[in-house]
Length: 256
Image (cartoon, rainbow, N blue to C red):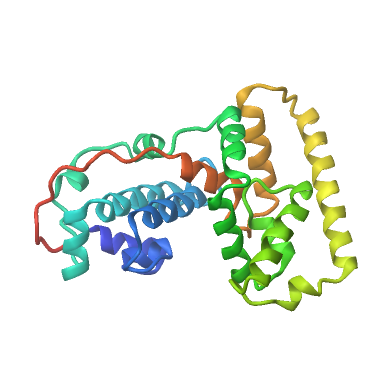
């Protein structure tokens, strides 16, 4: 069975871009990040309840190999075909090992270094403004999605958004400018509860200051926010991922 047929069977679409939830015009960075997020959801270690998890994970690896290779992607974009005999698909490869090369395990120090660099940066501001527009000023959704965001950061983030509104950069959404005080209070209570639960979980799991402890805590936090697609951990891992090795030259034009 060819790659496109496998995608149809496992993901209900033979369109490689639709499998990743992106547009055909997606950049290399967007493809990479979407691949990471989708593959993370079906990773055999994280989705043991899915009997097709391993097969889905392998198919996603092949899909990414095609779209990350310029020649293979050009063939697919122009003809809607995949060269099943090209080296990147025909060679015997461990897609789990390949995934780990692309997305190496991050450490506590990686997180701390990233947070120090990210907070107050132009990148943080750009991400925040995008979230403000995307969620139409809903601070619950914004704080859920923002990277490196804690309750202590909220006043700073609000001031950034307010400045953008005053300058005319973005429109004024009532959900932000007229947010009810009770809603703000409820958000603070949720944050305090999360912090307490995290501390209790850390004690129960016997976690100390070793490198993996913070990462594990963030993973546990993400399980409680499965609906939040732009999680801190997945975005951070994607940002820290290494560039993929250049794929061998592809052979053109063979139909699946």
